[in-house]
Image (cartoon, rainbow, N blue to C red; front, side, top):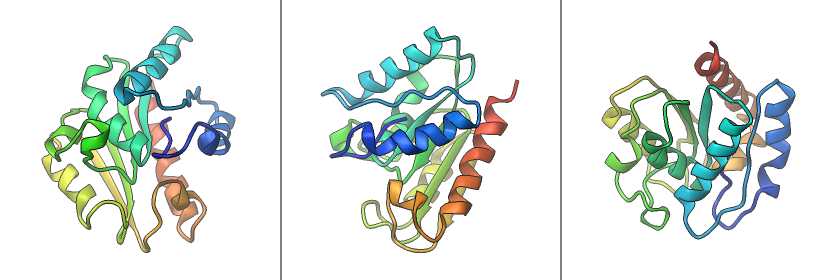
Length: 170
C-alpha cells in the first residue's frame, strides 16, 4: 500500500491494520527514489509470504504508481486500488494512457472537487481502461487519506472492502 507524496509508511499504518484485521496481508512501505521499484518490492514480499492474489495501489502517489506499474508486476496482481490517483510525470506516469494500461479490475475513488487532479480524471482513466473498473466519486475536495476521515469515509471504506473481497476471492 503506497502512501501519499511527502509522506511515509506511518501515514498508512492505521488503515493497513484495518485491512489486516479483515484477514488480508498488507505491505506498506516508504518511497525510495524509484517509486515503481518500491511497489515491485512490496509485491515481491507479499508473493514470498505466499500471497496468490495481490491488489496494488494506495493513496495519491501510491494510487498513481499502482495504476502505472500493475501491468509489469506479474500475474498474481489481480486488481488496483486507486484512491485519488491520476497521471503524474514526477511519479513516472505522465498520461492517462500510462495509468490505464493494466487490464485487470480497477477501483478508482476520488472526490469530485479533488484539488490535486483535474475534475474528471478518474472517469478519463476508466474510459481509457480496457478492463473491469468501478468509479466512486464522492462530494467534496478531500484528497487521498483524507477520504478515510471525511464525511464520505464509510462509503469509501465500503467500496474498498467490497472491491478487495471481489477481486481476491478464489
